[in-house]
Image (tube, rainbow, N blue to C red; front, side):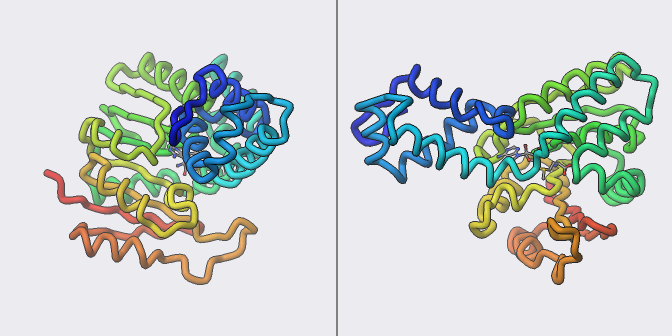
Length: 295
Ligand SMILES: C[S@@+](CC[C@H](N)C(=O)[O-])C[C@H]1O[C@@H](n2cnc3c(N)ncnc32)[C@H](O)[C@@H]1O
């Protein structure tokens, strides 16, 4: 990593990343994402970067400061969604499911281990029906920042489907890959791929194949990180899909109803870019089905 006139050796960078990941709530993050984060961090902290390069010493105060500050920031943007108890439970249920794939209840149990997917359990079928009534039956879907949402594919009731799932979490992508190969065995007309991808590196999105629909469920707050909505806008623009479905929670973290759940900013973005949208409202989540006008 080079910043200014100094270069942090590759083996030192790797060691730093490894140490950052030693906290259990951060261990699923991809190395690439942490590296990008470190780069941004050191660009703001050039003096600290120079000191670390000159004296790479895991026992030094400078080194400890980097670990502490970078972990704290990563936790804020990423760790929020992971409750370790749930992650352990999820691992166990998923392993059980791979032993008993005929036990469909286990899929619901897996979805119940993440707050976003748990909240959708009562209306998943309705949700997909309503989305597809607007978009027409899709043959291809991208799920960006998918979490464990791909485990809800059975609720889509689609015959032939290409499903591309992307997230930062190595563990979840690993589970989804295994789930997709099982689905393919059960029905060869289903083809799924799951990869680590950082949506913030949005130019990479331009390289993906054009699909019918892209899901961007509960992602905009994660991507914007409280700094306006430029990132989300860039990403929505770059997504190679005919429709993008963007969702927002209507409950606060503590479970209270939000005063203004409608998101004015996304409606303005659609107006500016000349995208038409339809709004689907469920008890705890709003879905904007955005038609990008791609033929
Ligand atoms: C609130 S969860 C939503 C998960 C899923 N979309 C859903 O609604 O069920 C946010 C997800 O975004 C992923 N994530 C966070 N930052 C990301 C990024 N820059 N690129 C890709 N995925 C990201 C997290 O790993 C997490 O799975």
